[in-house]
Length: 266
Image 1 (cartoon, rainbow, N blue to C red):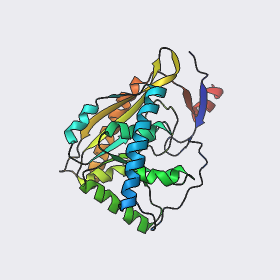
Image 2 (image 1 turned 60 degrees about the horizontal axis):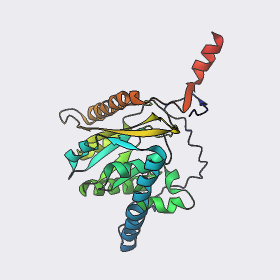
Image 3 (image 1 turned 45 degrees about the horizontal axis):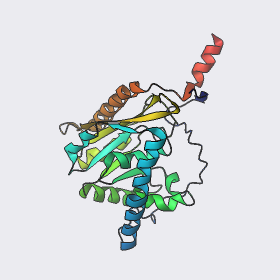
Image 4 (image 1 turned 120 degrees about the vertical axis):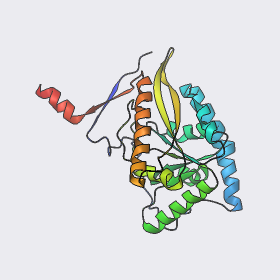
């Protein structure tokens, strides 16, 4: 079954956004509560995360995408340790669900854009699913880092999408900065990469999503913090680039505008 190919033209791999959600973003200020530790908060977490989100994630991903995880056993090496997981950002729904499936049975938090807690209904639920929105001001940043520290002390897992912006069904890895890699350097914890690929299915126009897990990667403690960040970033990026070669189905073709103009001039 063939799918009609869609084309998206872009200018900037680092900053262009194609999520198309048009959400009015709320301000993440010093009043935002990152961790809901009260009795009600804990009960809502169990209800939404364990009883609702986890089984729905498995069901949706298996039925719609025949989802498969390769090398999940790598995470056994950090079964009782905190770690960071870095992945490519290519699907609004799948990217929200896959971290839960990869880390199962342990829970995982996800650093997200404030849009994820700004939606009218889901925005009220996502904090109980582990969403940690990026802060907008100094006091909020302190609260954000306090929450991060607490999660690390509890030996939890945290997911980060370093590409920052969603490019639906993109089959390569966009260049990303090393900024977010200062967290594992600061807390001296290992890092894993998560690479989602889109692969052909014999009797369906929908792709199969195959997720590859690699790691752990460790920073060299003999190097400076800046060098450690860059080293971790490069290890993750190179591994994801190699895994991205497993893509064999291009649903959306991405063309850089400069390339388009050059081809016309030729």
